[in-house]
Length: 307
Ligand code: DON
Image 1 (cartoon, rainbow, N blue to C red):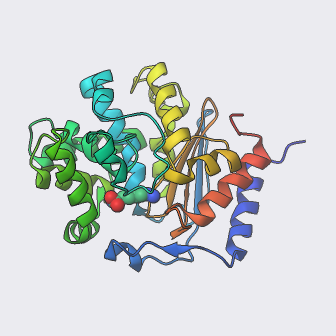
Image 2 (cartoon, helix red, strand yellow):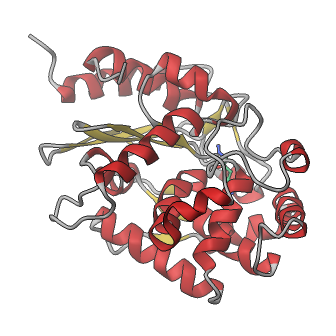
């Protein structure tokens, strides 16, 4: 008999509690360096409507790049496939904050999940409005998807990144020179930094990802995206969601996933589960060290690899 999911979660939490190599907490955004590296959390929202959790699943963390999945969903809703004239759909093979390909590729980022691509997505989401309008829309979207009105932005994290985000400023200015960022750079980055500074716990994040396991439907019956768009977002998560470690994540876990430097990962098993893990220590590629290990164990025990 297969062990119950709750048993598997308890085993994973116990194993992660014993881990000695927990990676290194991101410190290039000073506010993120304050987070306790001992934290570990997991939450699984199943297609049957259950929500299972373990560890620190009720503690909020900075979702950072995990927000790029939801920002992409909004941008596709606004401009549809025209987005792909401005952002590619290929893994970059480079770090999340790399600038090297942009010169050779005329300011068109490789994909919407590296920072350059997400900045173009923010430019689209800004849509001629003030950042507070785009940020408000994003926050409403996250609250609707998670069914939780308490989801909020951590203003200290946003301010910390605004004060230190020189690489992102460079990326945005560089793409503006190519005409691929169309609004003033400070407005685009204001949108982007606030979106990254959304704080959620693992339960909220797993719930927010449900539309991607349910062919684009919200469990309340509403349609968030079409089935083909949900499949494509999952495909991008699998191929580009972990930057230059996307191949390794597919090899080890075999589930579409999007990581963030806050230590969170959202992973989607189509038709079965939306999973959020969190542990703030990162590996060399900037992805959660224990979060990846936990998903690897989970995929092995459940057989949830998509391959
Ligand atoms: O732009 C940045 O550098 C951060 N706000 C987000 C980067 C991130 O989460 C990369 N993920 N692993």
